[in-house]
Length: 339
Ligand code: SF4
View 1 (cartoon, rainbow, N blue to C red):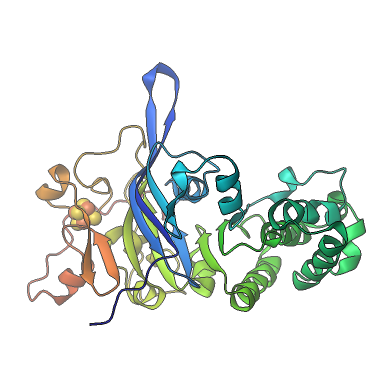
View 2 (cartoon, rainbow, N blue to C red):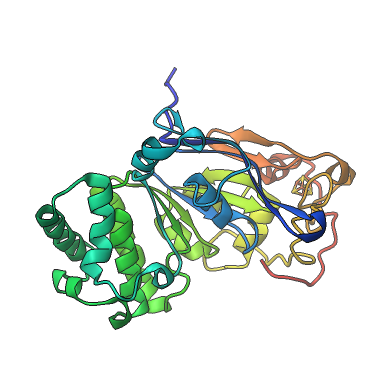
């Protein structure tokens, strides 16, 4: 029997809550279990508002989780404090959608990139200067960029600065949160190609968050789909794009006909429900064209339906496709929000 590889990062029962006025609590991330293996890029997809950015931030404790554990190299980082936390956290970095907001306009690019190096790696100023030059070359800005300030750069160049800053402490794991969605399409491909090269050359492990399936197909090894704060499907990239096992993934993929195996465009009924009061049973039942009575009262669990493939659905589409008397869609297929 082949031993299961040990994940680099393992998330168990992770929960993030936001408390609003009048006692309103939004459970943005609901008991998520996720494993990320060394050297892989896991693409996290879903509509905006589904909790994927919150999950990515919670995994690095940029947002504090309410409960659950995040195990990195045998340490539960939710329990770490002080110096041990800061040292461990240097291994885990984030690339933001818009780095400009966090780039100090008065500092040079060299200072911005050197700061996390000095803090995390204990380099001398001279060694840090040489390492900054190398890093600016690697991200395609060139070492001359070091003496300039953030406002002198375009959006794509600023994202390269954000990537250089994230890589400065030599992390093993990076969360990239919609890193190209604010960029022109022509620039997106350049930044994706840069990230692909850096992942390969540095052996990085990455959580790549995006609502754009085309981008994710390009960069991810595996796909995790989120809906209303829960992971509802995990599959290899090839399996997912050959045909999602969850009806929500099927609808998402059908909205981009150039990408997948979709035979028809599936219009999702209605809007994303209010995350403060998710529907009972399967949270997707209000929009699912396959929903049956059981779906309205019994919440499905995330379970393995094929090797390496997990789905949270009573009627995963693999089963539907294989069954001799496959049930026809029974839910309303009304015009509404497109995935
Ligand atoms: Fe649809 Fe039911 Fe599966 Fe939920 S459990 S996705 S409602 S078929």
